[in-house]
Length: 252
Ligand code: PGA
Image (cartoon, rainbow, N blue to C red; front, side, top):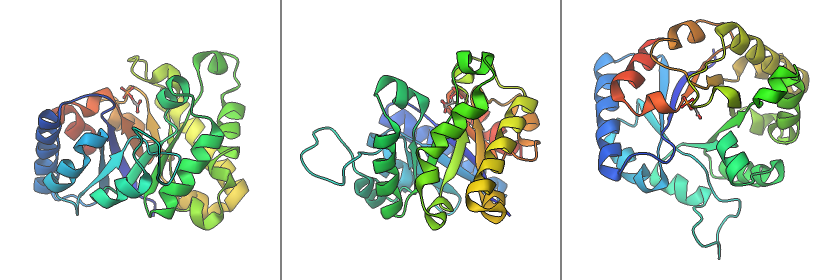
């Protein structure tokens, strides 16, 4: 059975102290609840990773970076490599978020380098895809998402792809308060699963965790997570409040 995952994406928010507090609160409740069914991931800023790894119960909570360098190491001032992320004890790397694609010019070519380094270092990529509003309005979202995947994760071998988590995040739903309806999200995630099956076979498609992201919150998580192809969420704004994030985890 594929894993259910609730992953927080803190983006460029929280001081180190506030982040550690947030991680502590989430960890305490997750441990107390003792429910082993859902994998909880905290996507923190690079500066927080080591402390958050030390703070949370690692058996129950994974830590993610929100990016990594496209190069293994060397003279790349300001970059943080996948190997460095791995050395902190983090287990996941969020890659291809639309904010990184849009504001930092991340192309499929760059993402392929990051994907390769992430996998080489034994980290799990949480690979994001999703269309802009114009694309959705033109009803071209399936073609758009397929092209994003064709150029990146579908270039991997089947063995590599098995290690990838996909997050579908329509850009029009990110941080806008406009959530995709559960029917829209289900339809897209079923479509993504179908193209994974075409590419890598049904068994791998059935084992791939596909998350929904975009204004997922304590109120709508239950309905979204109730859909057959939605295996969890990538949560931005609502992951910054322990209470809300915990409610989302509890939606399972
Ligand atoms: P949001 O962000 O939940 O604040 O919409 C989701 C994301 O960008 O990962």
